[in-house]
Length: 388
Image (tube, rainbow, N blue to C red; front, side):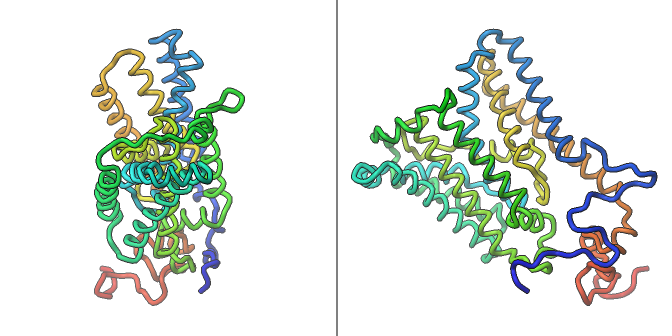
């Protein structure tokens, strides 16, 4: 079956992409269980944080320079989080993003790379950082998809290897960016908006279009929701998984360029704990850790919430330890809300009707004899005996 094939609903089943079945009486799943409701809740949380900041640090929080500082800080981790969103929606995880940012920044600021940039153009440094991130992401994807290694272990190994390689290349020293064209471009602004913030906005828009308006995005949801069903529908799951990790690596390369511009350095210490910050922002944004659901808008709001929270703590001279505790509490609350919403959606489905109609619920639950399940299976126990 060709890769371009798409899943078609079984006879009598709901059309692909349709909403969840309604309860008797016409009641749907509710506003808060949909993307609009979840994003609205994030907006409310962000507004509350802004109000708290305005009350506790009047004059300083609402200052335009402070607002731009928040956006600059959010820009770098925000770009990493966009790539992480795709990986998690696709059913994976990437713990190596911080180390890839460090490796990309170090490789792009070596003496050889900067000499080449002086001879040609500073864009060479940008291409180098993005290429290094993409190649490292390709290694992650191949090891996970074709090597059959669990994503957690594979990316944990890449985290250690990439950080160690960055230390070897930099000889544990901070490399200074001495290209004035590079510094001037990324330190500039357009109509008062910093270039780094514009890059973040462009990456977010591109990510939204890729996830919501392309076949690649639809396949990402399918692979994350049920990889076996996606394979049976004609999607090349292994190849798609590789591309997801390459995309994550590319965003790490872009983030490395932004960090190089903001700090004018390349260092093996760049990106420390970025993997935790990115996963936290993605989870806060409503993306399920088990895959199959998520939004780019939610991720952007999650990044802004965490960055604004840190800024409010800093302006009020609160310790970083207290900030870490607050972040942990927020993450736990977000996961609990996700489980509650997901559980409510599952209870609203009618298993008998879904399985008979050939919906994914029938395939996941193991009732394979119904329409939509893998051919040749019979309902019953694992040894083939009918259920008692």
